Image (cartoon, rainbow, N blue to C red):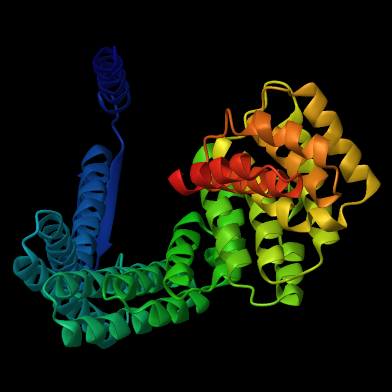
Length: 429
């Protein structure tokens, strides 16, 4: 369709020209004393048009000749830029393929091309298409690839040299993302070299926003765990769980493990209470942490009433029908409560008696109720509970303790044969 319109336009122009010039009898006279030159008007028009065309073409030719140096510089810059990007891509390909020596050579070639291009821009004042920000980013990435290859080859001197060069190249504000990436890689290399202190220093240099990214938090968690900084590890694990860096079960397991470590590091009741206060509400509701904290407090000769106040929530969960608490945790709960039976208040005694009545087949509860009665010198109730307990206890320590208590009860009522049999059963466990 466009060709048809062009053809139609040409016909229109031809017709207009024929109508205008066909019967034009005008004459143009040019006087140059003592001469006179007469030419037709049509010829004069064609000569003027030709003159303007020649002048236009001459000016275009002069302009093209004048811009040849600029175009030559642009062509050289373009070739250098293509070689620079090509070398960088080759370095990345070799890096991914594990050919670290070739990756180093290609990255160094890219650095050399960038240096040459930068020098050309300085000498000429301006290179078309040259961007200082892009050049600095590319230079930083090339240095980073060399450092990465040197790390793989265990050439720490070359790695550190190009690491510093990458940091210097990414100093401008527009290269901040590259600088953060370089610092993260430096922390990763320090972890690979089993130098968590240097890794933590590298992470500390990150801006606040970058330090809260998932990658940085993962490395910080790994670093603080190697340095045994449990409090910081726990805080980092909470942030990772908030960012959903782990599955729900994995996050809970990690936080629980770190909470257990934090409580185990306490060496006196005051430190333990501070560690317990450092846990958040969700962590203080974890049965494993609650029981461990109470056991640790009793081991440090702390306040038994405080330990029982911590255990109250776990006790209620353990006594519920269909409780999901494991048998080992139930046994540990009994073991924590047992040393403080002498100081039990009326509320706790009522709880134990209610549990004994509602769970007659629970050997662990029967054992605890029997030992509580024994501490109150209620011999009959103690004998009844312990006699039921020894029939179903699975834990060897509790089983042995129950037989020893039955032996003491037998001695108390003067039954030497029953006492001897009880001691025998305790020795067999």
